[in-house]
Length: 227
Image (tube, rainbow, N blue to C red):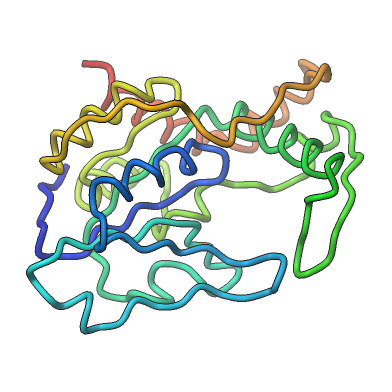
């Protein structure tokens, strides 16, 4: 994996339901005035602002930009920052990430806080249908064309580190060391409540066949955090 260059902006890719809200708080403590968020506003239907070239090119203040870089909304990393060179992110077991997304949508729908493209929405789908049909491919948040042949090379040549939520504390410690930042322990944020529904074995089988590449990438990331 690559070494951190503090003179270049660091891009923290918040993959949906992979601990990015908690990590957001830590990055803000680490980078202070050099920390910027990148999130689409679904309530007001507004894209994030681009950090200016003047800020990106100055060398005194280390810069970190963290958020959902979603190319499907034209707010991907390369849509805003074509010269991006170094990345960090967190991943999660793909099935668990999808189940967490399901819990989150159910919870926000019940609370009346689920918005999409400026409209309040409701969500009442059963979990098997969600697992089998909803495409929440978490690779869309990563600005690379991964295949089963190239994913290790892409990760090793572009990422400072990839943490996993299953080893969150250990992953944060590794990232802190690589960025030369102090380790700070704090409570996890934005953790969705569990629901009683669980996907069936047939839905899990369908899911794992569909997301075989995501599973391989996650397993590689897990190896990066096992020592």
